[in-house]
Length: 313
Image (cartoon, rainbow, N blue to C red; front, side, top):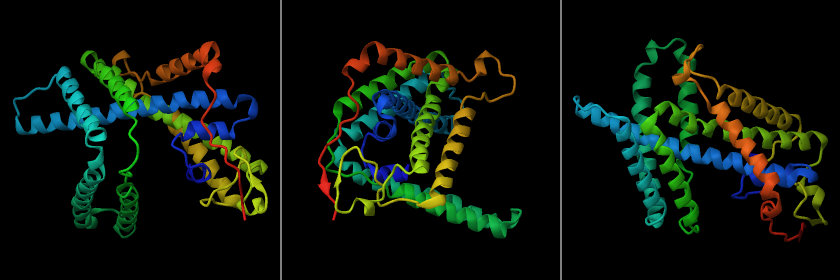
């Protein structure tokens, strides 16, 4: 995914890359389906994040008030409250977003230290501590560094309509929690299956082009005009067999996660504990395919591409 972002650093992400990599006869169809997968994944992740935040608030309420017994509709109300805060930060207080992120980053680092310090003290109780502890410290430090310093530009234009539509859909999804938390969890589980499906398909297309040698190196473009539809490696690129192996590993890992995202939590689940995300993912894709052939193919033209060929020196 990093290589694709280097080749085409676009906000469209997978749906743009799929159009770029798919065969010419189905570029439009593949990118359209990819767009459905990504939007469903984002929508489910948004709902899941608000639900997680709401549950943490309810858990704190129970911790401080032992007699308090939360009901499902309580969770939905707090869920809407968390969503309202997110909307406010991303619209009215968007100019403060970098400062808010810096503050959250500080809390993130403090929380990291709050876990790391006890971990060091527990080192003598861990089997193979001389290997496990250093690797845990190194990996968590790298992960926190990567996640913590991903800032947002303060001068970016705000897509208000998109924010409000996504928030409205998430608020409507929250109503499901009043009737059944299991059904709600099945809806937000689409975040894993949909996003990983988009990852696997995009990475598989990249692997295909990589193996057959369809992607050119910038040095090969010297003295020629780089057209918008040509596949050219970006600055971030793992060449040779290592790139193929890493790409293949990414596809295999994504397939495994995608399959296991449909598994229930127990071996013989009843209807109340069954994972219906497989059915929901299939139903959404079925609807997307039918809708594309009935109407969308007449109006959908694929991702917007700024055609501005330039000479590579």
